Length: 170
Length: 290
Image 1 (cartoon, chains in turn yellow, blue):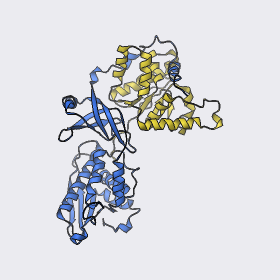
Image 2 (image 1 turned 90 degrees about the vertical axis):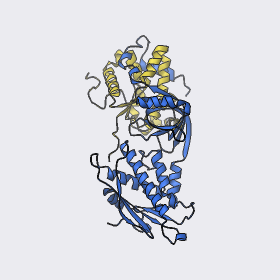
Image 3 (image 1 turned 180 degrees about the horizontal axis):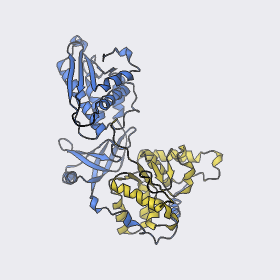
C-alpha cells in the first residue's frame, strides 16, 4: 500500500537535553549520539517528541529569560513535536501508575510509586507512537518494552536511524 | 466476474472485496423505494454516484497526502429496477498506480462500518473523508423519507448498523484546551473561516481549524510562506485518534525556520549548574507527591 513513509520518532526525557546542555563528562559516550540524533531532526529525517512536562523542567533549571526563550524556539522546529498532556494521556498516566503500584512482590526492592511526571513522559511517548524513549534514568531499563511502561522501548540515547553513532565507538 | 451478490451472502466477503479492488473497480446497486415500485429516481442515482465519487477522491487524498488525481469512468450501467453502476479508475499516466489501495480502503471501510466496527477504521481517514462515508449512502438512511431504498456497494449493503457506526465515529468524544503544531494548508473562507493543519507525524490526518476573521491576514501570510505554525484553542477529539478532529482557534503562532537556534549552540550552556543531570531532574520530580 502506498501510505506515508513512517519516520523514526525519538522521545527525549529532560535529562537528555540537560546532559547536552551541561556537556557532562560522565555521559561523554552518549553526547555524540544525542547530537547526531538532533542533526537528523534538523535535516528532517527523524522526528523528536517532547512532552510539555520536559519543557517545564528545563525552563525551571535554565532560569534565565533569554536562554529560556532560545530553548523554546529550539522546540519550534517542524520535526520537533511538542505534546500537551491531552485527556487521553492523562488517563494513560493514571492507568500506568495503577499498574506500577499494584505490581507483585517480585518488585519489592523498587519503590511502589512512580512520580507523575515520569509517567506522563512515558504515556506521552507511548500514546504518540514514539519508536523509543531516551532517558538516563536507570530505573526504567529493566522495564523497557513491558506492559508496565505500555510496551514502550526505553533506552539511553542511541541513534537508531542511521546506525552511525554508538556509545563507546565515537 | 459478478459484482453483486445477495445480501445473504455477506459475511466473509473479503475475497470479493480484494478481487474488485484489484481492478480499481467500484460497483454499486441502488434499489428504489416501494412507493416508486422499486424504480430508482434519477435524482437519487445521480446524487449517489456523485457522492461515491467524492468519497473515492477523499480516500485517495488520505492515502497519498496530495490532491487526488485518479479519473473515474462509468464502465457499466443498468438503469431500471434496480440500478447498477460500475465506476472504474483509469490507469494513471505518470504516478504510482494506487487504484487498488483506494478501492480496497473504500470497500474495507464500508465493510467495517456495516459490521459495526469503528475501532478498525484506517487512521489515515481524516474528518472530511469520514464525513464523505456518512454522506454518500444518505439515500438509504432508514430515518430518511422513502426509507425503503437500498444501497449495496461492492458486496456490502448499507445497513442501519453502518449509519450508527459512522455517526459514532464522527461524534466528539472529548474536548480540551491546548495547542497543536503543523503545516498550514488550504484556507477556506466561504462559510466559517477555516484552514487545514497537517500535524506530525507526516501522514497524519489533517486537523480542521476554525478561526475568527481578525486572524485571516496572519493565516494568509503563514500560508504564503509555507510556515510551520502552532495553534492554540479548543481541541475536539473523536474516538481513537491521536490528533484532534478540529480546533476552534484562539490564537496562532507562526514559526520562521531561520529564527530557530541550532542544537549545537546549546552545548555547554548550563555547564555551571552543579550536579548530575539525572539527579537534578529527579530533585524536581521528587517535589511531586507520591
